[in-house]
Amino acid sequence: MTSGGKGKKVSSKDVLIADLYESVLRPDQIPDVLDRINQQLDCDGLHLVGKDEEAGSVFASVAVGSQISGAERDYLAHYFRIDPRLAIGLASPTGVVVACHDFLDDRFVSGSEFYQDFLIPHGPRYVIGGNVYRRGGKNIHVAINHLIGRPQFSDEKRAAVSGFMYHLSRWASQLFMADEVRGAAAAGFFALETLGQGILILDDRQHVLFANQAVNQLLGDVLTAQGFRRSWGYGATLRDLFKQVTADRQARSTTVVHTVGGRAVSLLFSLLPLPREQGIGFTMPKGLEAATRAKAGGTGQEEAMLPGGNASVLVLVRAQMDAQATGSRLYQQAFGLTAAEARLADALAQGHSPQAYAERARVSIATVRTQIRALLAKTGAVNLRALVVLLASLPKASR
Image (cartoon, rainbow, N blue to C red; front, side, top):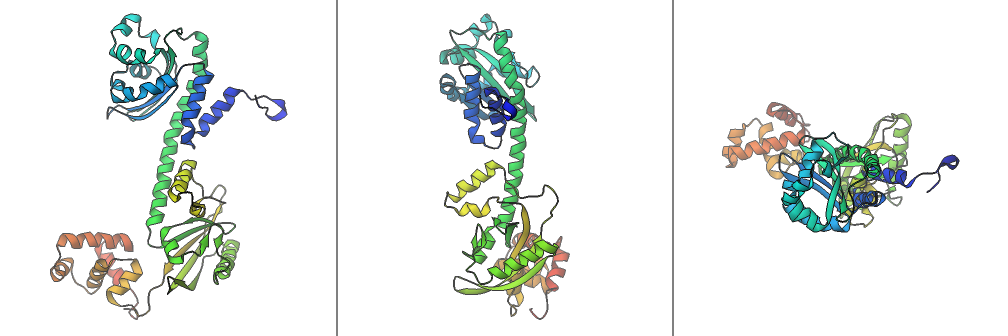
């Protein structure tokens, strides 16, 4: 096989195990890796099945090998419910190899619906494998097959399978952990995407690691993966501010008048330094990266959202309030409220109660309460009293 350092050879099994662990971050490669394990073991098919015991359903199924793949549809439609191999796997420790013929003799097989109506008609006769994950009512099992005409699994073959089962059990646990990480990352990106305030994350080269929808709407086509377009007049100003912020780790702000769609908008840029501690960086699991690219349709737009270096500066971009804004318009601009929410905010600031506003506006009190919850979420106020204080505290000159 390939050679490592100082002439040490790396076996095909070592490469395969490394690829197995790498597939945690590249789930699209899992079928290929499992198929290669099946071939390495000189077996006739491998089926990985994840079962939710509480729901009585299958949450994952990967079948490799032509005979096994052809049986997967029937298995998922009915036979997973009566598969005796799953109980055998659960009766043994996770990662331990068990052979069905040690538990199920010919008499059992001859009277088993699972074997007679499903497994044997599809070709397999002898099965080895076991449970590789169990937690919270969710179990993952691996079944490796010999077709009719081949012998039972020998001690040598069991030892070979055992060498993979340990790694399959570690790999299965990592799959679940990776899913948790991807879920948390996706939730974080969703939160950033849906903020009314523009968010930019720049690396130490001033390249854009992340740009949410709001900042793209505010800046139009000014942003590229390499940062602000050099043809943009204020790009140099922001680049200079970036250098100052990264040099002394002090936040800075500047106001820019920017034209979007023929309309001049006054934008406030706030540059905030991110921690420099060892290991702090902006990274994405490869599964999420692939999803990001797929979402962008491969147009190149995804490059502005993919990691290029260590996260260095967080940039907040927001439109400044019109100095002449008053009443509900003031609150609408300040907090990104809808027109209806802004009218309620103005009434609350003037001392009207929710009930009085509902009667005056001819809306139900339930609608007003829903709008109040929206106001609390958008302003960050912890309760109605804090909300009223916040609304009334805006500069009177603007009001």
